[in-house]
Image (cartoon, rainbow, N blue to C red):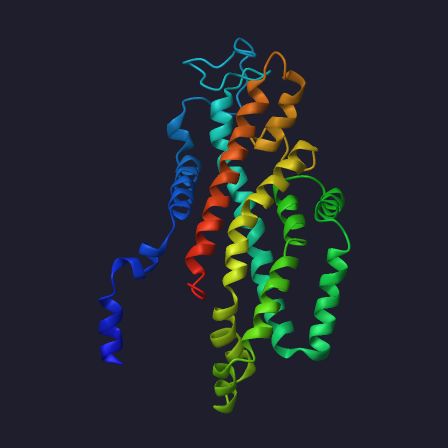
Length: 286
């Protein structure tokens, strides 16, 4: 055992996760660091209030004083995009937390126990998948009312389905492995086998999917904001900004374009990070 630990410590860098990480992973990680830094330090990156109106600077094009121009209320678009980063990242991460945890647990229980438990739990998944994701979210938001909190609740109530399916499929494979049979022979409880042995080996696809799912949730939040069902004005949420700028596409194209580019940058960030993470965790077959 000691020699194995020594060998592990002396493995070259290319055998560690740092060495195996692809350029797309590092690019995505760097871009994510930029987004987080912008969200945390937006107040230091601009001297403008993203909500304060100034009717003397209405619809000014991009310039040195206003890099992204101003909107129809004279608000600095650059400041609004920066402050909107925190709101949209908050939507992405908070609305992902419950679906990930709930879906992983549900899928693990269904896959390990099988039988009637699996049938009952998976039928609930089938019911959820019978309706389009966005339609369900819109229906829940319409029932609860608009706003950031209700939007996060609505997305969380629907977004757990793919995690349950992914983990269930992996658990079905893992529970037939020899290490699970050995754990049963040793008399370990089912809960311990699931949480400490099966789930750590079955959760990888769900983790990779979660990274890519962040941008889908952010875009869903932006779509709800565009429809007037998400964050309420005058909050600088990207989808809401795009909706407000659609009436000024000819004489104020920057109002909708700049938050749209922010959405694009965020999408590329999590796409690269998800692809890189998938390569990094793909140990078998290498």
